[in-house]
Length: 346
Image (tube, rainbow, N blue to C red; front, side, top):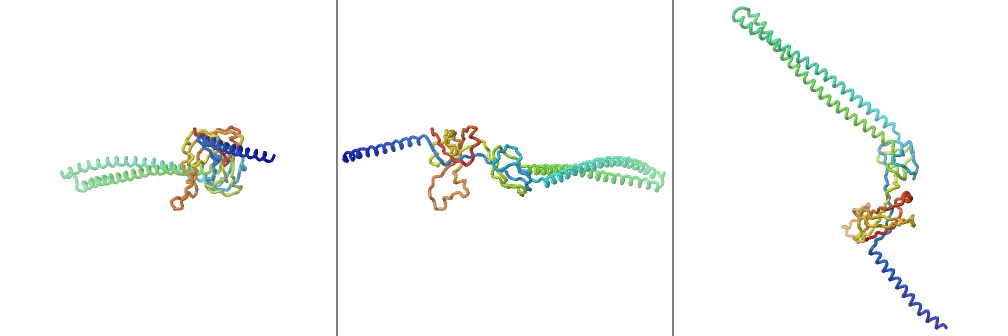
């Protein structure tokens, strides 16, 4: 009886081992065939747009309109910085602009006065020309009378003195006219300078107004406000990160494939996505784009293989995968969630 059981066991064991070997071979063949048409990796994460919100002016925070992880919409006012200093700068810039505009009016009035002086000077020149002409005629006539001994020398000298005085007065009037024209030209140039000052002060006012607008910080996108780094009364500086807004749309997958897996991958290929947080959800997508460099090249300290201590390591290339998500799942995904992707090569 014992011999019968022993012989039966000896017959069953080879059958079991054979079945295991056949099953293993079959599984290997299936996996091999599957690998010919698919590429898979579990080094993948959900990613999305994360908009950091920074202060653009310095000041003390006096109002915060959101709490951590609160849904927000694009354009919502989230933070208010004390703007009293900025408001004073706007008023100062406005006063400087008003002064510059008034200065333009004064300079233009000076031009009008200078033009009137030019007209007066030209009129004086014409009057002096008439006097010179009359004095010249008298001089010529008296010169003939002197030759005929009809007048005395003193009478002739008086007429000559009048002629020379009229000519001297004409020259003086002409010089005055030139000086008046120079003053008018200078006044016209002052108008250009004054108008440029108006533009400069207007730019200062626009800048001050822009700075004032930065005291109200709004949400740059629709999503969830996260990573809040501020408190009431805190002094913030330009460039300081206050919080971030994680958009709840446009989520995508970044899968890090080995460089040896990229030979037959290309944009547009179908992808099956399984997110660890939602294992029962069947998500499809497509290969959207390939990174311009390996992940190691974007690290803080990229490896330098020229040092001599070289060990060849298979690199990974980030691949962006666009997903077709149902609406109810789209808002539940969070950047950083783990995922597994399968790319259909055919």
